[in-house]
Amino acid sequence: MKSLLRGQMEKFRILVVDDDVDLVKTLRMRLEFEGYETFAAYEGVRGVEMTLKKKPHLILLDLRMPAGSGQSVLKTLQANPDTEKIPVIIITAMDDPRLETETKEGGASAFFRKPYSIEALLEKIRFYLPPKP
Image (cartoon, rainbow, N blue to C red):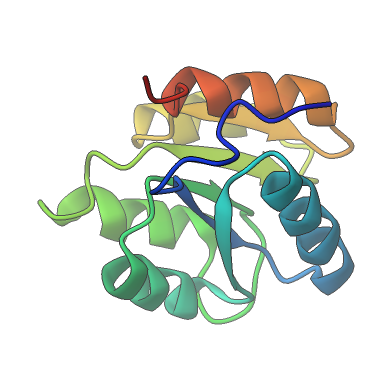
């Protein structure tokens, strides 16, 4: 599969915030294959710090993590004028049927339950980070 972004000067930056090290590693490898630059944080507080430092174009955010839940990270990012417009895609294994509505009302751009289709996730990412001309 040829990436639409590969070979361009500036790559879109994606921050993956999840405490599952193996999932993060696999997801980052796939995103980098697609031409994205990736960063990772394994706890909520670090996710906020990395957002402020690296200024990602999009964030993939788990909800259940140590040192700051995904909900608290989302709330913090939405309250900051420098980060409120960054699309946040929630990826969670939590099974509460209210979570999708609650997180979208809280500012999340999209919601995926684990296990998810990587192709569906990539399609959603491309929606928010279209190929540059």
